[in-house]
Length: 619
Image (cartoon, rainbow, N blue to C red; front, side, top):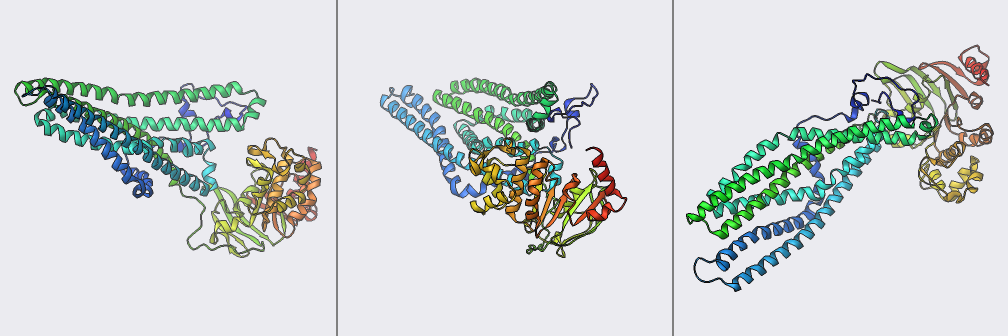
């Protein structure tokens, strides 16, 4: 759903809103609503299934390094207790410097092993994490490429961009560090609990009595934290969407001096994002004090009961020191697990949004058993075609149209009459509501999309120029074309002369959308691209609307070459460009009002003549 007001795109009028309305109430995108669901273990499993391809390859190495590091860490306090009880202050005999030096050297070696194991563990986990992120991002981008037009009709580009960038990036720490750290902390916790109970089960149980209390309190924050991080993602998505529109609409914004209004709008969104982040971050920080308070309470129990056990002879000073170290090491992984859970909640909030897109089904797709469309002649037939963008609001109302191969068909009519809808249905970018569209007698729903669209070429009014060279932009029509074929296509549409005058000729680098080129030059490139593709069906959607009269006259001859032998559909408001079409179809409110060539239609006192008179009235 589009926002009600968006000055970022250069809007010149402002819709008044009630003072009590918040930014969220006024500017809401449907797909960015907070997903309020319980923790989904199925989704959690699905997310971590991306690690499976690398589990056999590198996970054993990671586990070896993890176990090695954990064992060495858990051994050090035990050696410390031995140094105190056996070498420094033994109950019987004198202190032993030899034993002390031996134990000290052993501790140094253990720390060295722990350090080396940590280096390789981090190296292997980073490799796995980056590969998982690569796969996830590739899957998402590949899936988005397959989604239908109506998916993008309902979503701003910035919102889609956030899913592929920010939401994927938020999973990076989880896969590179989080998963292995989680395993390390769990192993370390189990190991410490076993050691504590082995040293003195009474003291061990007394210290660990605080753990259930801590988990009970911390779980109360979980749901709120998850929703808070989802809200952060939602706000960031809106900012990205607004930035995208602002950059694309900067000329309109400056032309209507709406910079201040645009900045106010952005500041409001930025402020909302900051508030959301502060709220989520504050909840995150709440885990730290909980751990510290419960840890402090556990330390009090440790020294109070430990002193008593030393006096009663059940515990030595060395073991109390070791016990203290183990307890300290016990609270650290507990604290990290709390942080890990927060990290997991952030990841779940992002993964929900990622999988929401991955689970989106294309409205238009190959049906089971669809066969490739063979090379076509170009006969196209619409049989009682009805199409609705929204249920109950028909854009086309029972269209019957018979087009023979090689014919040029001009579609004319007022804005909203259904011209663009017809050409979108030919390429099956939308599926019809009822009726039938056939090409050479084959229902286009029975053939594969690639084989259908591969034989259709389209030239739009708003030509898209990709970042790259002029040559690459023309070659986009057929990627295996040679340099000579590219230049021949440019010559055929009279684009060769202006290209050779550019600093780098065909190798001139152009920026995104070709901002350094004129509208007419961009259109000529699109003609060359279409000609190079050599489609059997050609669609020109207001293709000459942005070209001046002199340039239009130059390409009329080129268009004859372009249209020759092809079935073509020409959508145009400038009626002078379609007078030579084999058939002119006049549309009005989704219905065909008139059909015929220019001479036949002008001989009638009908809708077509009315359009011509209206156009001449403004000349």
